[in-house]
Image (cartoon, rainbow, N blue to C red):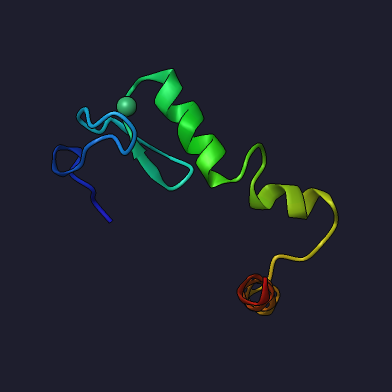
Length: 71
Ligand SMILES: [Zn+2]
């Protein structure tokens, strides 16, 4: 999938998008990249689950979503 960065702006400061990190459009500013990392859920993200030896499977994600709805 080709992405034209010119069509996007940084989600945090509104400057032209230069990167996609942690599923967020950001510019080159390290602060914005850090913001994206935090917004994503901190260091590791889903990789943290993997490090804990827990499987990353769709069923598991769906149950996690259900749990979030209850809270
Ligand atoms: Zn930015």
